[in-house]
Length: 191
Image (cartoon, rainbow, N blue to C red; front, side):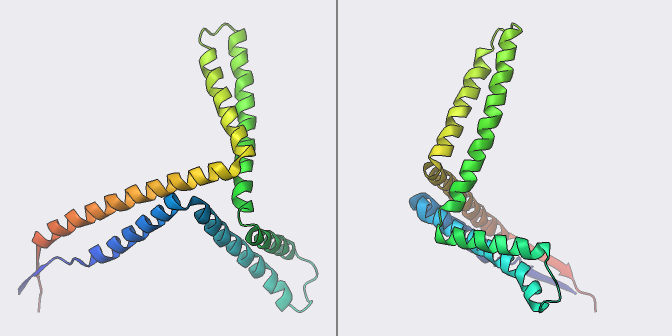
């Protein structure tokens, strides 16, 4: 026995909903990057606090049977770090950007010393990588001393990426939906 039916358009609703959420989140990150950073720091701080509590609870539940455990130390440190991140919401993002800036500074200084060795050995275009490494060092120093500014720029860049992806998804879903409306599926059902 043969049955024919139109292909399901149910995928459109779920994928369209996800694309709209991405679009709204991206617009929020573009329009209010500082608020987005604080929200992200709040969520990460709450996650770190939850991890800390989950590490402390087994020790408390043992009612003193366990003496001291490394999990307890990690739990207390995570709880304190998460609580501090919630009190000072921009701390976590600024800390991450500063750490990233320090790492890039160190690698830039090492690269500059290698480029100067190229000059010593007579490499003709030694100045090109030197200029690139100095520019990288300057950007890294700016990230260290102005992490909030670069944090907002990163949030806005991520927001633009989310908006572009959401619009692309909505267009794709629209055209795939139109195509799937014209497709019929035929299948055999055996008794």
